Image (cartoon, rainbow, N blue to C red):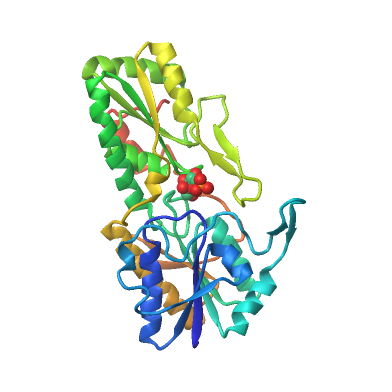
Length: 357
Ligand code: F6P
């Protein structure tokens, strides 16, 4: 191969730039040119590109987000061409032709499960493609953990440590809403590491009365309490709290609002002053931590090696110390934690942390 392309798509996360840098520098070492596709699949379809050189990736690994830009809406095989009439077209072949006309022979796509599903289609339609999974949600089978998860845990811990002091001063319950879509990993790990007293996950519906009784005990014992609630957690018999539906997005549901709802319910049922906080996009921002930089660089280099050796059609991952590869799955399914078997749930329970069950 003489020229490859790279792109980032889906919700951004810390570590993307380290993966980009690893691909570019690995390519430079072998005399291969790299084209950066801007703004995710929008840039792929519309043809927004930039050349990536050794100079353009200097020091980018310490930056959050992605220097290439991203979007979590577009999909090349179901691309919105007329918003007024919500008309979609398959732009896959056209996008591949644009790349091939520039001499691009292979593509590396960094993204979550939606993004990598489109990458699968690009690979099947004739553009040799390798995927790199990333997401703060840690909800992908291909890599455990995913790029961005580790930094996001740190961001959750930073935020919760700040609300803990004010909770203590005011004898309050603080309910912190944590991202993760349908997976509870970020809430479990972030909640645990920040010393939350109660952790509510999408994988285990909670009993509101039991949560309230537990909070009364905790407040008596230690003045304040922290509840870490996943954005898609729900009370037994109720549904998730949806903040909005984005109709032209591949993943249409955006969860949100559970912390506010729960804080009101806790205050009404217990009489304890309760406040809520939505940690929001702070969780996805900022400098990647060293582990994410290292992991993203390893996966970036591995993806590049597979691509130039003709091993396309794979997603590269990491499991423990080992770099792994799996074929693009045909079915998109977010990985959820298995509540009754998860080792960290077990540790937390043994230490008295309450899960509302
Ligand atoms: O998938 C990453 C994520 O941050 C989820 O945890 C969250 O539900 C979603 O993206 C938010 O999406 P948006 O950036 O469109 O608000």
